[in-house]
Image 1: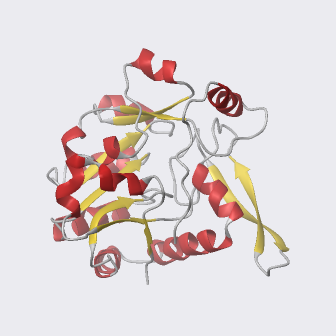
Image 2: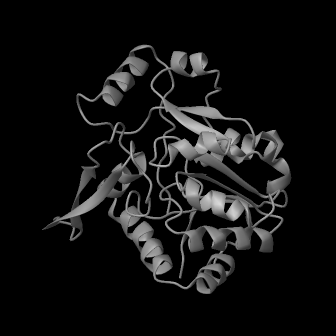
Image 3: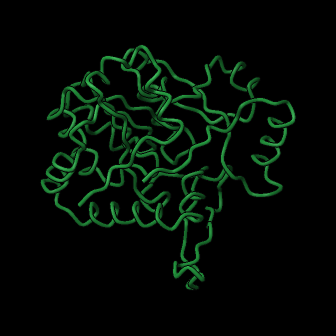
Length: 266
């Protein structure tokens, strides 16, 4: 019922991270479980973007899509851009989201567990999407406990759900969460002293903040770094004329690697 995706180009770099080798023994692989960007992100704010059908049909017979940004969007979600351009990616993520949001928590746990690839070693929960409900986050906690030999990790802006479940569950060795700045619950990140990721527009911005830049998802995934905050360079397709677009142009001019070449996998 649920469709996990093969590692995209960025996640493939995790195979080369020595600190994660123990999770990838015996030819185990990296996968992700993805949902519709924006639509499944209840606390997205500065990155809120949604791939939205226009009502028209392309010559190939697929619905035409457009990107709709939130009124306070500062940088466009790269996953939403993928969904607007690639009908198969939109369809897969929509299918996962539609299935999960209509499930009881017990069914969520059942399908996330039984549909988990048998050769999974590392799972990124959401290259696209977020924890859309408290029950859904709880389901992933249960799945992580049921699969102690698999490493699960995620970025999230659903901080209030996270804090609720921290009180209910112990810290799991195989579940690593990162609070993502730019949401409507940002104040809770500092209140609860959570490890975080911040999107920056330049290397100097990261340096001033004292943050290392994560270019291969290793900071996000490694359990030994679960208390270390980090930065992510602006990337993706940004609206023409926006501050994010200007920052990308400057990065290109200075030949700074800013794109992770995330070719979507299904």
